[in-house]
Amino acid sequence: MNFFDFHHHRKDISFGIYNLDNNSIPTDVPYSIGIHPKDIDINSIEEQFSWLESNISGNCIAIGECGLDSFAETDLKTQEDVFLRQIKISNAVKKPIIIHCVRKFYEVISFKKYAERPMIIHGFNKKENIAKDLLKNNFYLSFGKAVLYNLSLQNTLKITPLNKIFLETDNDNFDIRDLYFKAAEIKNISPESLYKQILENLETIQNG
Image 1 (tube, one colour):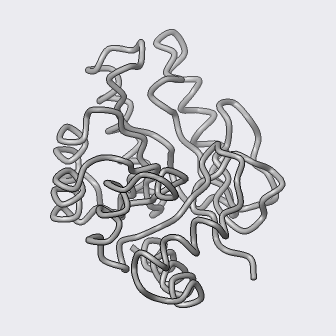
Image 2 (cartoon, rainbow, N blue to C red):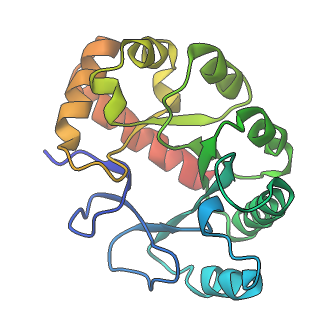
């Protein structure tokens, strides 16, 4: 069985959502497209948005990854402007948003009121209290490799409702099957049941 990889950077994975690199052209596999906070170029923002908007095609599953990053060189105000603009694009094209967030979770939560489509935090690996606040605000959480060894994150996954979960490899090179089996063990269900639930979650975010 092939398990769905919610967010990845490898073109050899066909069953998942490929994160399109900055200024790349769409692939023949499902992909997401967005302006990452670390890729914002203040001298060519309009060109970046032109690239984004002109490459939203039939295989585009989501907008992103986009969001806020406290370590990005671009100032926070510009990051917020670019993030909000992508939220509005997701509203217009009726696609969910895959969010990159580093130490700006409560700022990201404050943007939820602008979003008409589901918002998913990718690569979530923070504490349970942050997860609870995100879940309370109707975010989805996508978990990655850290679940395999981080006990605190395993506890966070345990309290996350099944209908709010995705699993991903991101840019780590490992077998997504290992993550499904570990997550299923933590949730005390079969890997097949977890897989089925994640496909249902995918359908839910696509339908808004």
